[in-house]
Amino acid sequence: MLISMAPRANLSTSFHRLFIRNMARRAHPQRQRPTPSKTVEPVLHPVYLELSQPLAGSSKPAADSVAALDPTVFNHPLRTDILHLCVVHYLDSLRQGSANTKTRGEVRGSGIKIRRQKGSGMARLGDAQSPMLIGGGVAFGPKPRDFSTKLPRKVIQMGMRVALSAKVRDRKLGVVTQFSWPHGKTKHLAQKIDHLGMRKTLFVTGETEPPSSLTRAIQNIEKVKLITTDKLNVYELLKWPRVVLDMKAVSFLERTYKKDVAVAAVPLAV
Image (cartoon, rainbow, N blue to C red; front, side, top):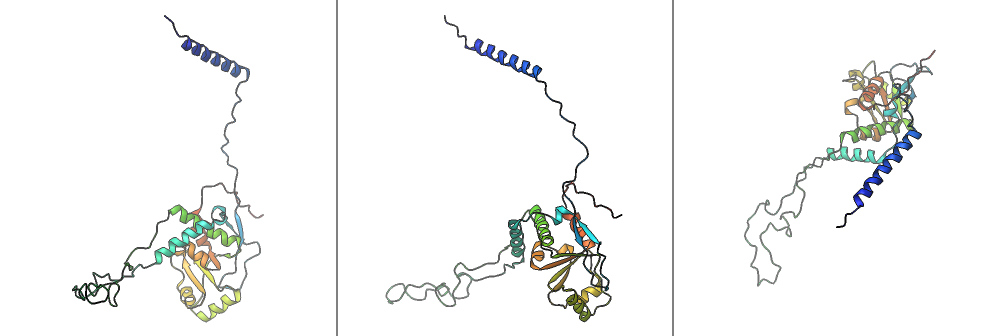
């Protein structure tokens, strides 16, 4: 009777490999891995933006008055595909979807056959509600529907970061300390806006309700709009050529859209 020696050969080979591996480990011991440091080096640096002149008052801000913006919100790489998704999502939500047409079963009239099938020398016809006849129903016409589309929340947040960063990169974003106006006269505010060159500007405030005097004075001025941060979206940021934020709006946007990334500290002036 023949006995196969293959299992014994395989066993001896595995022991030989294990012996060689152990000898190699003894000859070349593994290096000690360095312990991870608890201090995190800053990856991004703040975005510095000079303060713009406010609406109320004639004094200009000091030359060294700057606002330190969060780079994760105001220095995001450009993503035109994300902007396109956000704009289409917003415009779809504005569609009413109330268009409605009547089919041949909904049009008023009798269902009797207009003429006999054969013998008239003319085309075959059924009832008077046929889509081929004037006053008949509509074939494949629109019906009330919901045109709104779904978009992930994180994609919308990225769209806000990209839109704000694009405004900063194009130098079309301004920051003021606050929005105020002493009275509700539209004429004087329009003159001040023209003097500052702020036509076609979107003013965004972080207040829950803007000042009543400013709201009353600005609502009749052409090509100017004042909104709160809860009504700000990607479409509005891209629609208006220039955007001006107050400090509370900047704080709200940074608190809402910032990322957990190490940012270098702002150096204090001596």
